[in-house]
Amino acid sequence: MTIRVLVADDHAAVRAGITLILDGADDIEVVGEAADGESAVAMAGELRPDVVLMDVRMPRMNGIAATRALAGVADVLILTTFDVDEYVFGALRAGAAGFLLKNTDAEALVEAVRLVARGEGLISPAVTRRLISAFASQRVEDRQSYDVSCLTPREHEVLMCLGRGMSNAEIAEEMKTAEATTKTHVSRLLHKLGLRSRVQAAILAQEFGSERSGTASPGSAIGPGAGDGAENT
Image (cartoon, rainbow, N blue to C red; front, side):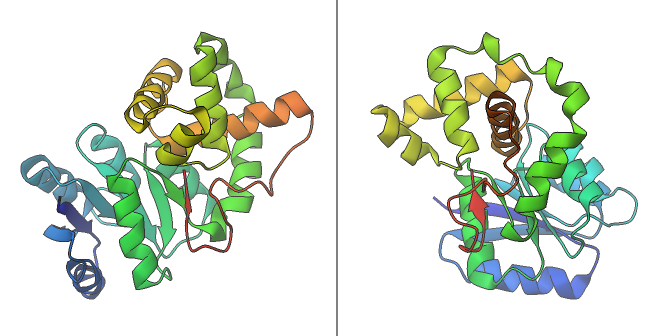
């Protein structure tokens, strides 16, 4: 199945470069390009892409606001030059499925789009270590909103697997169940906890694990390897 992608960036040369890279993959098709967040939202509503590759700083509507507006329409992969906490946090809170820096190489970018299209999530390893510790500490006062006791034992187990950076296939293998069943568990736990992405669930699992152990784990990767280009959840 071909993955349909919308590229949103206010620099024409950047859009052209990303489009060239993605169209070079046999299983990816760039169906549209947007120069600002407002256009991206409108075009996504018309074109119904599987993934929107979104810049953060854009005119009329920034990428974070556009990501929030696209909830339920398409999965958003943030691609930006700015490795800034407020952008990372804002993007993840808005429901982005992933966050990559623009210095990501072509092969990693293509694979990131494939991961997001499969329902996985990822964060650039360049921001992961700081993200887990800083995001967790910033949300201490909000933790009572996430009552994990509402989860079934199976869903709780899946949540912990997400925190370990496991894909659906890996979770299914560990739990000795079908991958489709794993996807159902993930979908249900996200709904119960009011989370908008697997990445948010992975961070919550890290926070919960830290609370139980009494120690922070800022070095724990959301994905399977800090040196593998992108860390998927």
